[in-house]
Length: 147
Image 1 (cartoon, rainbow, N blue to C red):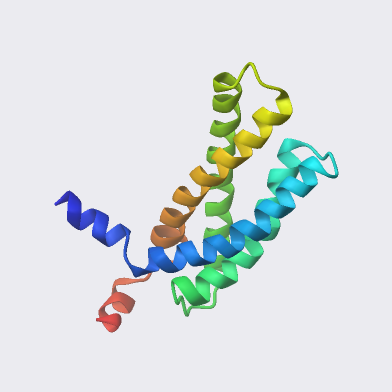
Image 2 (image 1 turned 30 degrees about the vertical axis):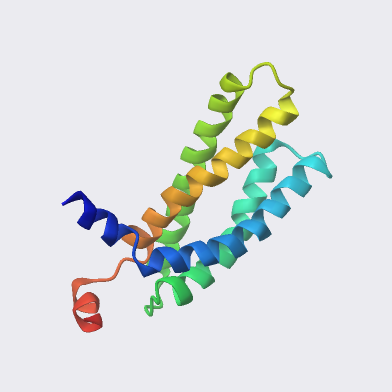
């Protein structure tokens, strides 16, 4: 039973999501680390810039390529945005205090960079589930058409 659940979660859309994710992660992470390390912007602003700008790219790539979601509606934009905000708050809200505890003997800069890296990983997993089962979920009629 658990193998079937894993197969359903990690289907071909997951591979497409990873490909889009690599593109999007390189784009967004570069923005985040440059903002933090070059422009000396705050942890929260730098990580927010990553997800704000990266989410615009992600919406279009995942909607049309990964999930092949055909509907044009503001509700999918709203669900996508809500998913991004929730994933962002959970991932980065957890990562920073966790890393600060774990790496308490390191400098704040090392802690924040490690927290941003951990937050990116947590965000990716939560975001895939949220996009697949919430933002771009297909109705039962659309699923039946696909088969």
